[in-house]
Amino acid sequence: MKERKITYFEQVGEKNIEDTINAAYDRAKEGDVKYVVVASHRGLTALKVAEKFKDLDIQVVAVTVAASTQQENIDEWNRNLPQLEKLGVKTHRGIYSFAGVERAIKARWGGAGPAVLMGDTLRVLGEGVKVGVDISLMAADAGLIPAGEKVMTIAGTSRGSDTCMVIKSTYSIKFFDLAIQEIVCKPYTDGIKHEAR
Image (cartoon, rainbow, N blue to C red; front, top):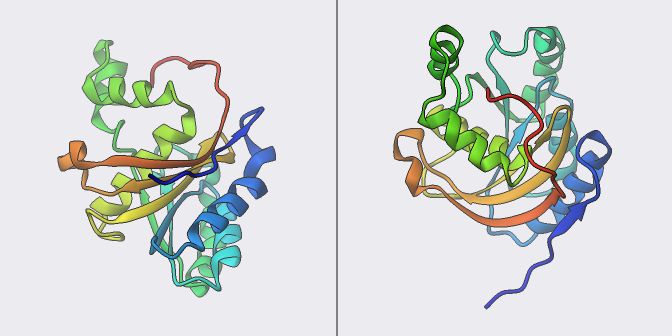
């Protein structure tokens, strides 16, 4: 048996970024995690994580969404990309595993397919839980992290990282091999507050 501390934030979002990164760093110092996958729309959170983790033997992977999803963040991501690369951060821009073609089907014909339902089911635990699973799948599918590896994810709600988990990674085509092994921190949640997407 192993006891671990879980931090619960009173609210979601940006105000928790520094505390989330610090909690992730404290957990990463145990030395059994070699990859940290960070959701970062503009690259700023990934830069903070790379700076904080630079003394650890951990590969930072920054994942941002496809250009079609977050048009307003493209320029800022592109401006931060050279600094991320200079810090040794691997980067990936892609479509969320739980979205993609299913969003086009929903927009055209209505309804929701199984991937959208799976994403919303994870959101019951918090937006950062869903995004953390998503970015781990995206990073594995892109070949930036190995499947079957213990990885840490840092994700959150809107522009604020507020959730850190330790996940056994896998590819999206082997989704049910994925395992959320630890929750390091997350906010208290109050259900899903937006339409299905």
